[in-house]
Length: 110
Length: 120
Image (cartoon, rainbow over all chains, first blue to last red):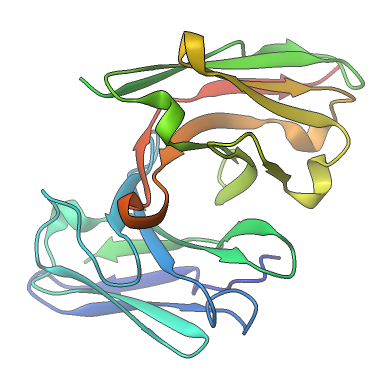
């Protein structure tokens, strides 16, 4: 059981906006940056968002990140079939002196 | 081309040892923190260890005392020495880089992964 929690699944139809949450505590999300990764099963993860809300070059602006207090969210607007993947949040935990990943959220595009 | 290539995975008996390697190319290896992240089949990502640019190291609790991360900047290489392996260590192991400070863009480059299977 990860100390940073994500819903195990999310879904939406093409064109919709979906959000995926990442909930932690004051020792992790509350005091450190959050990063988001997209992973198509069988492939390596891909960086989507860094430092809470920054997009690497090449990542569409349909993807956005936000953070408030001890929670963070990834929003995907204009949902497309190719967005179907697993999404993972990650942050540093000051108490553990370790990086922690959320359990991952499987996004299904209906 | 910026690239990370892992090697060294395989089948090992419980209690055995294995050494993973990660060869980096296309960037200034010494300027990046280097991480190992693993993923068991059907499970989420699990951070394993990091070695900083100055050689400082951190480990996830379940591998502390059993795994040792190291780097050889002259060879652009990252290593993970895994001892006293358990069935729960079975996973695909990825190496990944992360910039520091103003060049912190997240774990932005990942290798293809190497598979470790611990079984008798």
